[in-house]
Image 1 (cartoon, one colour):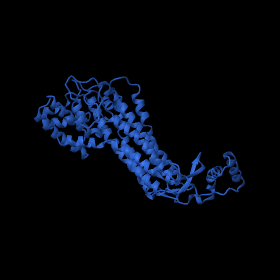
Image 2 (cartoon, rainbow, N blue to C red):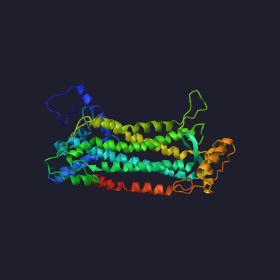
Image 3 (cartoon, one colour):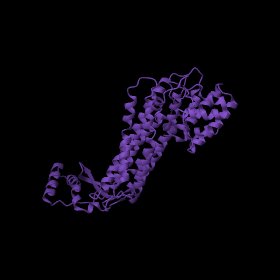
Image 4 (spheres, rainbow, N blue to C red):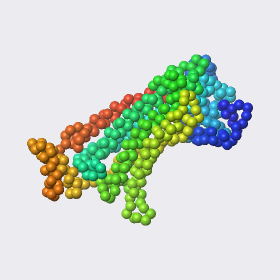
Length: 446
């Protein structure tokens, strides 16, 4: 069994080791390639301050690049008896380069190693979420424009209320995603700060160049105060989780609408056949399983901030092992949300709508407000117009005029989709992903 980085001259009980390690080795596989990137930046900085020789740096970088490729190819493993990803990387280096491989740990603690790994991982995963949100947004805008003139009933209290349109319905969820994107942008900016060099939370006596590692890894800036850098663990995950929950909230609500509108009692939309399933005993059934699963998974993700908060909220300053458990709920959540976004975009693209819903006279009363407004515009006091139309509905004499004309911004006749798209594009442009791409490219080519 390989020794632990922290191990002294005694062996720990195997049951205690099983309990304390938990799922950490499994979770660390998410972080492997980011641990390598962090190590590459760190040792480049160590050479610049005289803690590594130039020839040592060259050999270590070459071997770290090989390990990085192993990660990219999905072949990286944490061997039995090896505690975590940091130990595995160091073990692989020492096998190839001897004691030189042990030098990569100078000037840092596992605490700031895992901090930078989490930052790099989260930064990359947030980018994937941003990209998938953008895809769904574009599908929604396209559908909104396609069906901008197709009316449908609007509801309050699940009662028919006023005329709406599929242009409004699809467009509403598109605009909701722009607000979600603002949360993602704030989470990304908070994430994209370098904690490397904070060591165990109290800095190092080595003359570390933290600005250099910040630049090498493409961070916008650093977590300057070393105590705050460690306090930021858990806080970053919580804030990112809130951003993910915002996206998930939009998805869950949209999925519920779609399930409702797909039911026979509504029949407003038709979902793609491959996104529905049948019943084992009822041959007529076409259940909206994909949207139901999106709804459930999205609701689970909306609980993520609370899970993180309940783990971290009662911890004082400094590192505690409690924080290990956050990884178990946080790291897998990105793939789940990305999956939901991809499925939602696919269904929206394939979704068909009923273009003749309002031909049914049961929906005629939703045009009553239009009639009230018409009478008021012609000089009748609004309350009198309201009463006149109400009595006509009660008497069965109301005749719906279905030729409506709305002109104000954001209404049926003026969706403002071009402005919503401009807003989304403006938010996305402020992430500056190209800076990270360039920094990582240069680091891997050193």
